[in-house]
Image (cartoon, rainbow, N blue to C red; front, side):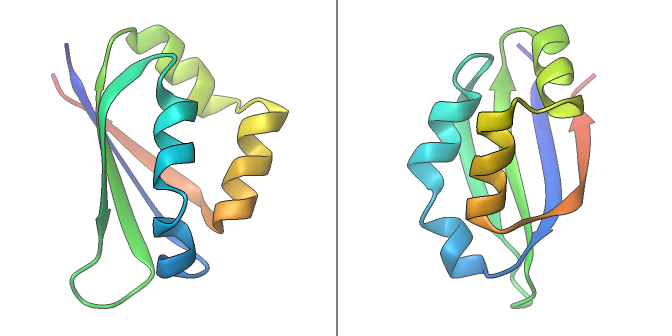
Amino acid sequence: MPKVVMTHAVVDTERWLKGKAERAAALSAFATNVTDYAAADGSNNIAVTADIQDVATAQAALASPSPETAALMESHGVLPPITTYIER
């Protein structure tokens, strides 16, 4: 099961961190072991790692988020672009 790393900026790191459970639930269709990381330098850059069960489903969901996922991202203060790295 490959690991994926997603990085992006957020409006407010504390606001984003409060959405951890919602984020894990949204990714649960294709991912497990979702872990959040905040930048050590105090900036609003973050990272999320997860173990991916279905890479194709994950790529499709990240490339074109559903309206519900897009609304969740907005409520968490996600700022595009999202850069995704897949373990090979």
